[in-house]
Length: 244
Length: 244
DNA sequence: CGCTGTTTTGAAGGATTTCAATCGATGTGG
DNA sequence: CCACATCGATTGAAATCCTTCAAAACAGCG
Image (cartoon, rainbow over all chains, first blue to last red; front, side, top):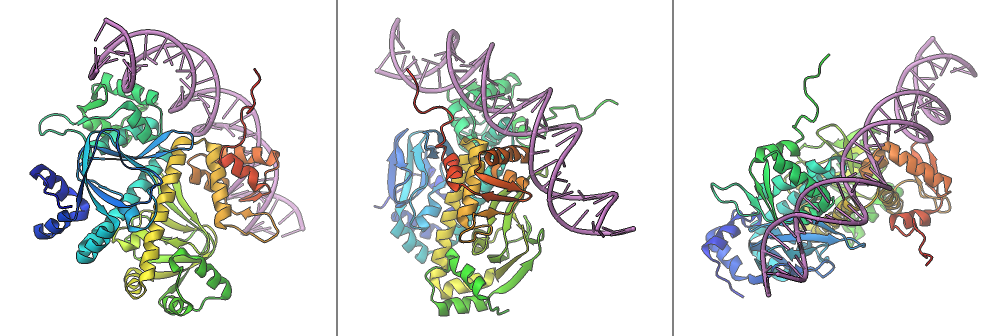
């Protein structure tokens, strides 16, 4: 059961919202109750519909939470990197997982089963408080994305997705190198409710304008500020000063 | 502070998920801690951005939770009838209200402030458990709506919204009379991420086919099964049996 | 090198929005 | 009680964004 994280992994763990405000000693105890789970690319931590048994914190790799539509299309609800928590809400109730969690790259995570989560929360009430705050935060974010999906154009939504991914710190984010995202056009399409064709066109257009560099399953963002401008719809698609 | 509900209102209260599994005596105590809040049509229980202070259970009328986009468009996140709980999540954390709650008709609700909620939950742990379950349920529903918005056609989404409203028991739902919804085309549009024009066209088309009767700010559903079929996309837009 | 999976690009089509004009219902004040 | 103003609903026509389908280019891998 017990698990000793590397320094790098410890860093990820400390970033997790759920562990904020805990002493090192407390963290130690919590980590000792964890189980290490490793999943290869395209493997699953859990599947949609299974009873929610485990709460995860990602150590390495990216994980995508996706729902399958009755027609077989996928919708990506969230794309997580190291230090992100998965299945917070669902493990607090006794529901089933509403989504599947697939490793987008080889991934490792710490897992705590439901009972352990409850007993740890009893021991460290701060965990419960953090948990509630996380739930509220997730809900808030999902509501925002819902609003965006309902009101915004595709290009804007794709821009938002890219900005979010970069700011979340997904993808290799070296100090001096420009941010690099590792995901396919298809992924981006499923994250923004559009088709891979449309995403491809958008990426091409951004590349022509020098904002990004598009490659196979990757995107290098050279001018994040421009992408942010698109996300916030600050780019003048019509001249701001009209002639009389 | 104390408040004596009528029989009709008591019925609404008992329907609320948050109060499931409580004895009458317990319910009594909880109700005595409540404050009655009455809001006229187009008035607000609270506004987006205000610090979340109060948790509500609706007694009468309909309430819509909506978010305003930066451009001034509205997106309706939820449309609630009597017996529905509002601001469950947000009152458990110390966040701001992420949406505004507007009375779609003259409305009354019971309100408990944050402190009261916490102390009641301490007294009756069942309240806390129910609360968590509600949160999980809300999240699950929002995820589903997100998926629908991302993948489904407008007509299907409108059908879903109508079905949901009817099954939630919004609107006058006499025993023998067909279900009647009281909302504008604009409302339906804002609930489904489309325009009032498109909703109007859809309603007209349904009316021609005899599924509904459309009126000013109301919709009488004569053949709910057909609307459900559209929501589930069971209607053959192409013949199911093809000729060789 | 050939295979597989990803991406690009073009052209056609469709669903939905936008805009403008009209109609109908509701409520108000003279 | 009617005339008028207001608000919601309807409908048509044009525009547009996006999807769909097909074909080809491209990258990585055994």
